[in-house]
Length: 141
Image (cartoon, rainbow, N blue to C red):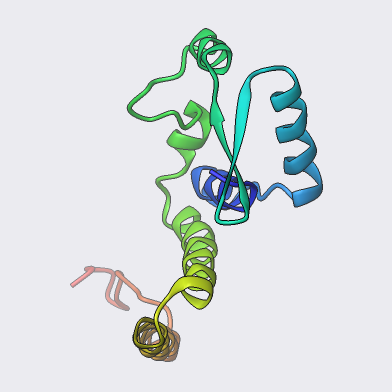
């Protein structure tokens, strides 16, 4: 990943609880590269980082689950509805930026129409008012 992808991935994995700044990520990536934990390649004008053998060994020492490397405290806390509402907009914004940069005019137009539809649906949800499971008679029916 390149630095920006890493920032958005960390934000996504933390359910929006943590979005590291570029001023924190890029120096950390440089230090890890200097320590031999990461290797950097230039791809399409971006510095893309990957783990070296030493970096993989350090990762294994952390006892990380390869199927889901998300730290347990974030994995456990990330399932709540509010967490999804924090993380999804940031993830969508990142995808929208990628479409703006690399998408065809048709893709950009379709994405804009899709997001306009989502915006209208969100306003409609707000207009409906808060959902209530209980009724005045207390029966819940």
